Amino acid sequence: MDYKDIVGHDIVVQSLKRAVKNENINHFYLFEGEEGLGKRTLGRTFAKTLLCEEKNEEPCNQCSSCRKFDHENHPDYLEVDPEKGIIRKGQVEEIIRRMSMSPFQGDRKVFLIDQAHLMNKEAQNAMLKTLEEPPSYIHMILVTSSSKNLLPTIISRGQKIRFHQIPLHFVIEYLVQREGIDQEEAKFLGEFSKGSLGRAVELCHSEDFFELRDWLLELVDSIIRGESWKIFSAVERFTQEKDRVQELLEVMMLWFRDLLVYKATEEMELVINRDKEKLLSEQSFLDFDRINDIIKKIQDTSINIQMNVNYQLSIETMLFNIQEEF
Image 1 (tube, rainbow, N blue to C red):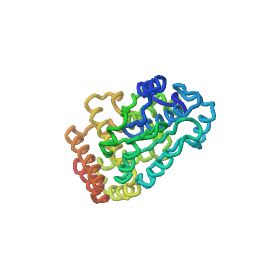
Image 2: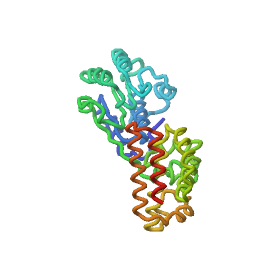
Image 3: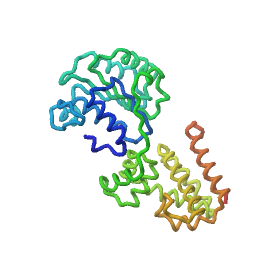
Image 4: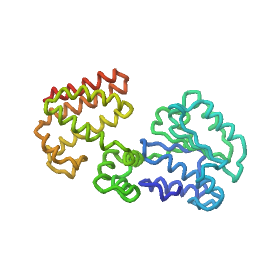
């Protein structure tokens, strides 16, 4: 693990390196930004740098501390993750207990809490107490994609490091060079993931993402042709894929977005589903109002599901409403 593994966050990396060089290291950092941007990876790299025996701007990757960090057995580093979607008070109390002990190997201890916004109220109150007067050797890194769910008093005590979307060309380059996929597939995944490298890599390794995408586009085509009987079996498939429903709805929304773009410009360069030009052309007879109405129906379905409206009914209604547009 090294800074060379960080993609698209040069400004943040240089800021953290400068803090180490100038010995102006904060005791508490808040890494915030959307999911999949590499916040935790950079947090780990920064933690490794702080613990490195060489005390340089980057980890040396050779000393005993760096080797232990890479083998995930460093005595002065603790990483806390949610358990069943929650970070509880007991997990924070373990941090407090470990804080009370002096460093075992060097002169620092580093704690990283991933998805810190999932701390419950009791855990956040306990965390707040640890931030009031931390020992001089303590450094805390909170990683979050939803800082609004953290207590304002916690946010105000930390140095905020804001992560922005990674430029598309960085994501594409990474997927081609590191993951070995072809340029067109990398472009699709980069655009579909909206600059989230973590999400793009996850989809790259998914065994069935592209199969599900093909199934969805075939389903849309069937609905357009009036084959309404396929909706019932489609609802069953949606039920099987309930944990991924937002991903499926996103595929559908982007498809109809591509239809709008293609219909308006006939330029495939502006389309995300570039490998489906023939199908886009066949469906471009739809008028703009109908396509916009369908996108709105899919968006409404996404919101309804997030609000725990009856799942099967929401999907069934959406599919039949789409059919009615034709």
